[in-house]
Length: 112
Image 1 (cartoon, rainbow, N blue to C red):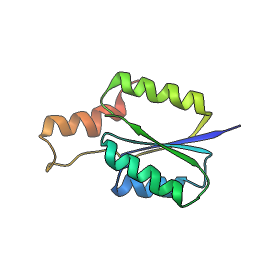
Image 2: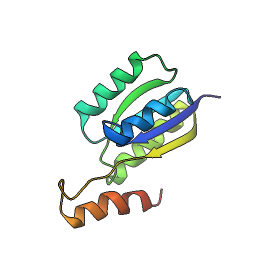
Image 3: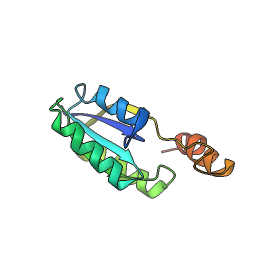
Image 4: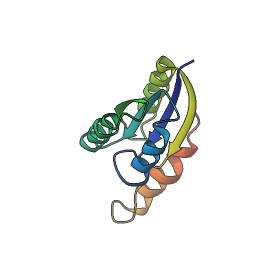
């Protein structure tokens, strides 16, 4: 059985730290972030450490329902979901309060 972990907000900060912790606990590890450059660099750097998991970037805005369906489909292709670290979020320096609520509260509560 191939185990899969997902980390959102994995391009930097807490999300990247979560990815580093999960990398030796699962077989496959999609790193999710809306910023393609940072998530690609994070996946490359984490892969270079040889911690175990096959790491791949997955560019996604977690408020995008179709994109989330694509992530779910990809996880299904990879194996059995074992772990999720949801660290995606934005702060008041990045957006207004409506967008913050949409990303930080609404997206995690969205039904699958």
